[in-house]
Length: 306
Image 1: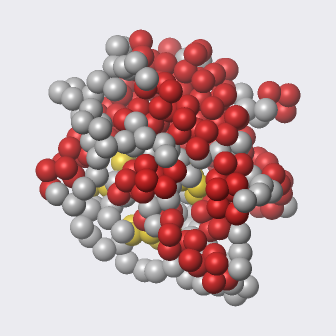
Image 2: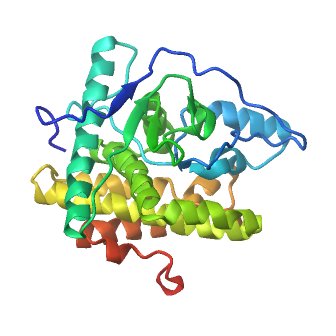
């Protein structure tokens, strides 16, 4: 992906190095969850995957429960080749990573500003919060284990940049375009918030069983993947996409499908627990957005289309 030397977004809130405060609470019944306030956060990542797996083993519960509680799940990662920044303890590398995500965020701003304008609307840009270890949002406290997520309550996306390193090593989804897909997916949730999808989902989930909520969550997440594909469509048209970039994103979508994750973690799949979609679904909906560039093509709520 061609990203160096291009415009960077100023909608970045850098909280790295600060303490987020608070801690994960273990409520009655033994389930670990991220506290919810106002509205649930959306998105995903694994930053502290090993910690979660240890907790899951000790408590005898499905690790996917920990990774997906409150709409938080898994998204794709990066590679460490020279054309894509790789996270490291060094300040220079951290600055490079910040420059990369700021450039990708600027791309999403340009794309969605134009899409909304053509539809007769105005796009309100989200803020991207960079944090280290833990962070507080309007959706509550989150550790790096929650990975990248979007909070409708404050219209901010959150990411601990070390997430990318973990996902590359553990999940085999390298690539700068895959890395950008992570952010584009969270911005996709912001678009859903602006057009009313997330408020409606948060209102409906209170009346649904866990199985029904998971099924609806799949449709929400797949639409965010499709919206990420729309970003990719216009990024390609602008000339910023290089050979192999699309394959990186599709590989990432495959690696973080619910079925692929469950097979990797526990050796079998439980379809009724899926809440982000299968590998095939995530690849297909990203590709639909990428090929069409049209929001109307991203109607994942049409039962016949999944």
